[in-house]
Structure formats: C-alpha cells, structure tokens
Length: 318
Image (cartoon, rainbow, N blue to C red; front, side):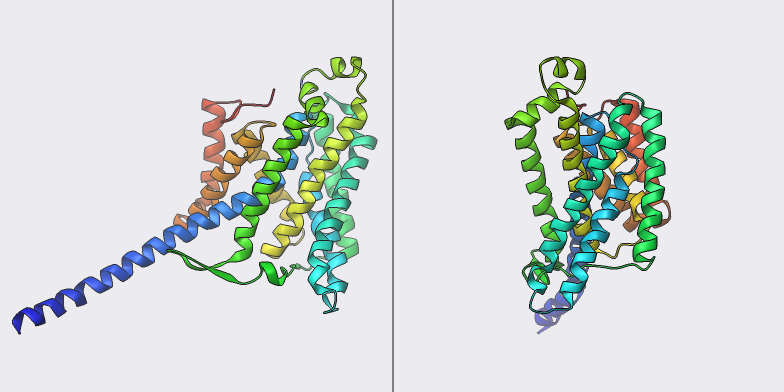
C-alpha cells in the first residue's frame, strides 16, 4: 500500500515536469519554425533584389515599392472577385499573376527610363530610386488609401496542420517555405542552365565584352530587372496573405533584402538563402527573448559578416 502511494506521488510530481518540458519544446519549435517561414518570405523578396543589385550592379532603393505594387495591384484584382463566391477559388491565383505582372512592368519602366543610362553611377541610382519610391508611395496612398488589408488564402492552403512537437500550425506558413524552395530552384536553373543565365553571369563584371559579343545588353538588363521585380510582386501577395499590409512596409522589406544580400553574398542564390535563414531566425528569436532590442541582433549579424567576411558568407557571384 505504501509502495502504491509513493508511486502515485512520484507520478504526480513527474507529470507537471513533463508537461512543462513539452511546452518548452513546443515553444522552441514554434519560434524556430516562425523564423524559417519568415526567412522563406524574405528569400522570395531578396532574390529579386539579389538579381538586380548583386548581378546587375544596379542600386535599386525602390525594391520595397515593387513589393507594395505587387500587393496593392493584386488586391485590386482580388477584392471584387472575393465578393463573388463563384470566382473566389481563383481570385488569389489571379492576384498573384496581376501583382507579379504589375511589378515586372514597373521594373521595366524603371530600368529603361531611369536606371539603364546610369550604369556604374551608384549614388545617382540610389537617389533616383529613393525619389521613385516616394512617388510610388504617394500614388498608392492616393489610389488605395492608407487602410491596411489582407488576402485570404484559398481553401487548399487555409487552415492548420498538426506537426509533431508543435501541434496546430498554419499551413500557409509552410506553403511559404514550399514557394521559396520553388523560387530558389527555378532561379538556379535559369542562371545555370539557360542562355539568359549565361549572359547575365558573363556580364556581371564585363558588360562591354558582353556587348562586343553581339548581346543586346539593355534588353538583357530589362529582362533581369523584370524578373527581380516580379519576385518582389510575388512576395507582396504572399506577404499580404500571411499578415496585413499597409504603407510603410516597403521600407521593412527593402532593409531586410539589403541585409540578406549583404550577409549571404551579392548575386548568390545560395547565399541569399543562407542570409534569409539567419535574418529570419534572428528576428523571431530576438522578438521571443528580448523584443525591445531584437533589431540589434539582425544588424549585429550584418556587422559581424562585414567585419569577418565582407564578400558575404557564400561570396559574391562571379
């Protein structure tokens, strides 16, 4: 009888510890998974910035504005269809296409009309694109207002999924990782297995030689800029589905893209992935452990990278 009572006491004493351990494990895994899914969104947006800034050597400080254009134009297409239940299933996918197309078209106009003839003039490019970002923000405010909005994911991507050790977790966040993997593989194939990729990599540091070989360098630059801008537009729709978006978020994604490219390596797809993963995890763990000073952790990673390996963790593209 005494042995039974002692066993019950031991069981009562151990169960709370196990519950606490499970809670701690779930908390750890959830914060880490949040960092990975945030990194996936950063990767999608930063890949476009890496193409433009890392490979083309074009300073585009309006990259965050391309993110906003993708989100707002996508929502302009999505909102009227969302009210019609018959077409709701396709509204989100049409929003993605519209957002990417609008961002790509804006990128082509920026490259052809403003940045193409400023090649090698980094300060002038930075000032012009900052001015363009202000103009774009004002026009978005005039057309759409300042109220935040959010997309609703399709039924196939909506709802929670049960993960071991974590419990219920939003499936759309996991979809962000899938989308980022698809973008990474697609870009790698384009840059390493297509004629366009060969031309882009050949013209990284010697555009004159590329032109001497008969390549239409302005057309190639416009195509690469359009691809980078389209990725920003894709990130805008996906980001506005994960959380509400409003004016001002463009600055956040511009800075995050800049930090990711600096940490990972200019023009390197693998480096962009590594940089996005580090920054995404740093942001989420910083918010979880010391929310007031969490931004310091992100910039500490960037400063350490510049001090130890200025070319980035994976090195700049060659």
